[in-house]
Image 1 (cartoon, rainbow, N blue to C red):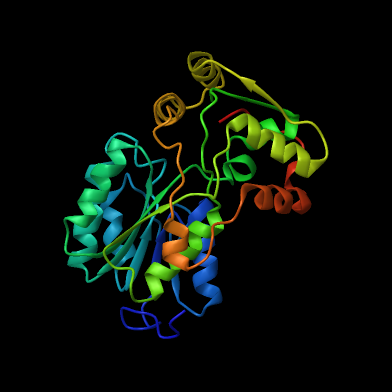
Image 2: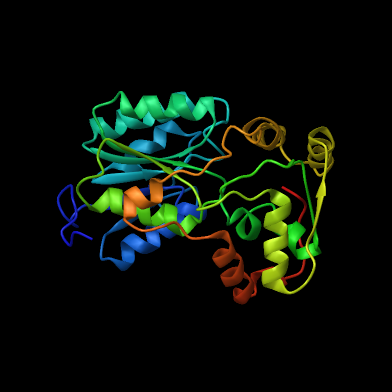
Length: 289
């Protein structure tokens, strides 16, 4: 890592939008460990950042040198392209030049968000990612692992699950090193796994069964609504399982190697490390979403 970084060295903080999320938390921790000042962009931070409260963005961006942007709940959500464009325009007005965007594979809405950045004057980098391995341990799928029955509307299509630490390492490199501006890195794991195969690998790491049950998308969405999950979230999850997992992303990419000069972390290594951490030994406390 370049010890002086970019955009004025370490003098100005880097804004991490989504700083409490799976990737944002890791980006913030890695930047801090390397001696960079960090400003968290989340509703819990002070000043707080909320994608639905544009009036508060300027206060969060004030004095920032660079930004990592992870949109909640997903770039596929309605209205995301417009919000990303507005954020980029304001960031540039306030002198924030380097912007790294977390994007998703196979999502037309995400492509629109990417264009909002690439068509701007920003020194941009895009991290276009496959499904996170950590969805099984830090997201809504953890409950299935804990209960021993992973019931999901996922068919026999392979997905190259990417490790969030690889994403964070790529983001930190793009924020602090030269050579990443204008680059789009498609980040995946090193091999394809169906969700059933992923469940089997988690079971092997845990030393106990984790059964995979296929659930029709409509039934899964109905169950979410019965648990009073917000309609927007139910629609988004349905879209991700029913549309994005149609085979369009069933191939690996070399983004981790290109960004970091090393191979991506394998899902088996993630499963073993997570099993050893004990996080999959906790009691079930919530529903599927």
